[in-house]
Length: 378
Image (cartoon, rainbow, N blue to C red; front, side):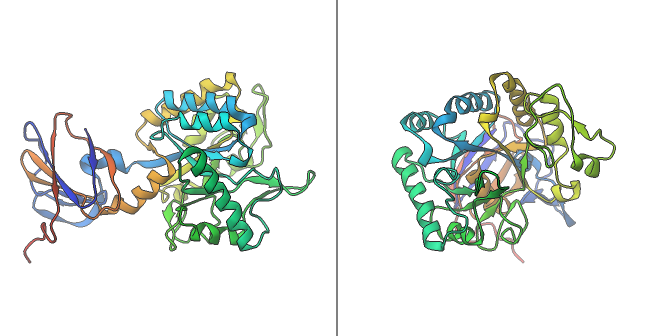
């Protein structure tokens, strides 16, 4: 069943008939605390009927939305939506025209979210890197203003662009330490993609000590480290990190774009050690839709469907992940009678659409919470 919840409320969930869960069983923040009337010696990682919500979150981060790439974006996003996915669109609004803005306005914003990928992706030079604070703030803010004006959308995330300072120079990221303070201080901003380790001081995938979400480490699903844009689907390329992290696997890999098996393989074999990934509650796969020809889209459909129909990951948009990370430890569920549960959302900060493992015909009653209403006598 699906349940829309609001902060400051609790919900009685009434089953059509009793189930086998003992009365007084209680879960908090995705952990089982009490089974029947017995308090467990230590909480167990078990979210009970809320287990579907506590799967790891996956964000599809799409880079470089601009006028010259629009047809590829339209194809890419249609495939994602048709196969049960969601995606976040990194816009370079200074390089967009009305056709792009009109297309974005036509999208389902429950499926697609727009984020700040710099004004024009270095077409007029660096937008952030190397500039003083005031210049960086204005560059970011004019981008925010234009998107609000054209789309009526407030972008909540920043992600740097990869740029070259000179045509023959190495790639750099169009951000620096000053950029972080611009993001932290801008009233619109809550998310920083590809944050440096020092910024992600609570770890990637978590909200840092300044209140900024630094999502799980971005995974370049198209170009693994050490391989430069392979496009020949008939060839294999040596990938150093595969030999290091997965010595039992063949290190010579085919390109992922256009190859469904390889795309899914990379989902199952992340670029970071498994013990690190186990600690990250969300991850980011990033794509460049201009890199996907029409013949490549069957592989994207297979990857999207694999994630949407699997049991490990849950598609989410970035701001959705932010609020889930704020509230996931504040939700509680308790079996209060043979045929009913109580879902406690009074401590949450934002509304959520919850998917619960309860029968579809379960009836929900919303109640405003009153202080100390569920306190137990000492």
